[in-house]
Length: 494
Image (cartoon, rainbow, N blue to C red):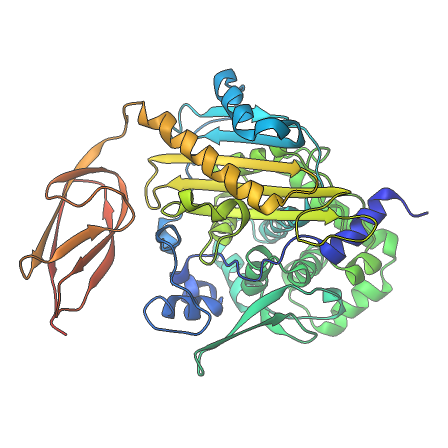
């Protein structure tokens, strides 16, 4: 019988989500640690001209060591009660079509006293590619189950295990980046049969490029880890034997045990947020699934638990957050100009349909027009001066939902910034000095708005220092500030 959930699942394969081919994540300096090859090319492109590699926004330049969990040392069993004043302001921001939106927002700028706001927090939506967050949770849970107290082995499996694309990838049009170091050249194309890359790379392709093919391969791998345990990875013949000779009903049960069990174990309500099956048609055929659902409050609960290090464990939570850190062109909610100097950790998904003739433009569905955004915003990048988590769902018909989310991101961010501008900062500040040679060198702190002045006071954090002088090579480096500090910079002639 052709049910509504099956119809939606079918369209999810065809039009779900995205055109995310320009979106990339993960800090660029982690290329050697992770073996994610494309990071090398992106990093090189910041200092050298490489075709197709744009200069990154200030908020996308954090190093791997700068990514941290903001609520790690807090004991917060659940989201606080909604602040009615803030919730009223959020409704005003949504405007006349507020009832077509669901919003949940948590301001954790003061980690000990988070502020929560919501509007229509339980309105249901189809997750689209936001469901890939569940695949990430489930994968890291399986890895932790096999190596519960052995982070080194988990990293080894992530970096050294090479997986080769098989028919589970069929079919997907999303392009992913392939970097050729010798030619210093990127090529973008969909994943093909027999494409081989590390687990870490496939995770990156799944969450950054939002590849359905990569997601299907990660789903395949988590089932293999569950079945083979420490014998994983296994030969292709063993993989084929498992999926070809295990009854579909048993495979389906295993998939649901992994994905729904992982959510339940990590404090997420599967009645409110779940991914029902594979992200490709072949995957769905080989391993039947169920339906998917989500709402903004349960999405925010995921971020809340992630920042506490409670999604699987600290290592897994931090790794997922790094995989969400945007280090390429920003889209949709994340593309708001207001977020230029903010660090943005982001995932989105869309699903839309126009009847009877189809949509003339993307994200303008007339039958349904789902758009979901989930983000962690740290303003400014490198500091925890203002930090908030936001989950936004919408189903506004016949309007470009990508543009709508971008506009709302600007309004929400400006509201949060203004809210904090009227409050005295409780965070300790430190004196920061720069002594530069030659004299009259220009000193600038790239990730903050105020101009540099000798002896200025800044809160604890990481600051991108740039010193320039005509005829000399520029100096650019992240400076860690946790006490009064003076930095000596001696520029070198060209």
